[in-house]
Length: 238
Ligand SMILES: Nc1ncnc2c1ncn2[C@@H]1O[C@H](COP(=O)(O)OP(=O)(O)OP(=O)(O)O)[C@@H](O)[C@H]1O
Ligand SMILES: CC(C)(CO)[C@@H](O)C(=O)NCCC(=O)O
Ligand SMILES: [K+]
Image (cartoon, rainbow, N blue to C red; front, side, top):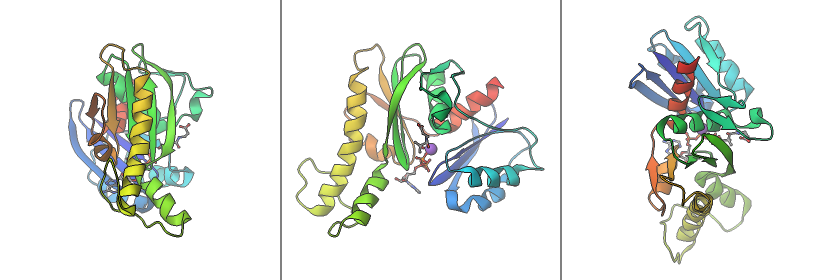
């Protein structure tokens, strides 16, 4: 039995995994980290593996609320190698722990070259080759962050709630389509580098993944809980 916790900048996602499937999953706003103890009250005693990219205060809060309940608590940090994935970042530990977990999760699912896309507060687009080598990736503002940046830094642009159009003809649609096209363009351009490799595909996860998936023109799979699954895979290797 393993409990996985992914603390992102907007939301904390968690899951209880029994070795073959998820028994329970949940999510809450990162700002409400204290409420995680309500969920934790229901968890079985088990090993807990955490990735946190939301800062040290969040890490401290999570550690404090787990203390006394679970004795085996580990934070995943990116390293040069883990679970069949090799990290070629210049400074391997600089890679976000959530990206590292997603790469580990992806490698456990697929033996072919793939693009691992985590569409959250930020969007990350990471390239994993057929040998399990992480070949670098992109960080860009996520879809909602792009829309919010336009609203808060311009006089005339609202926080847009429009429709994706190939030829947008109003402000709302122009913003929504622009922010989505920016995300999709980054993903599709990165994919073009691996498109001819056998079995190449894109794995998409994160809160905004479904929104991107609706318009992606490359082979892709939407994966729920890819980061949590990578954490479980890592926990099983300990
Ligand atoms: N119910 C929801 N609550 C919050 N965000 C949502 C929800 N549904 C979709 N989203 C989208 O998902 C994004 C958050 O996704 P996710 O939880 O994967 O990010 P995160 O892990 O907090 O971010 P990061 O890992 O980049 O720090 C939001 O920016 C928004 O675009
Ligand atoms: C890019 C985010 C914010 C995505 O959640 C996170 O993985 C992070 O803070 N990464 C650290 C920097 C890096 O991955 O190079
Ligand atoms: K995340």
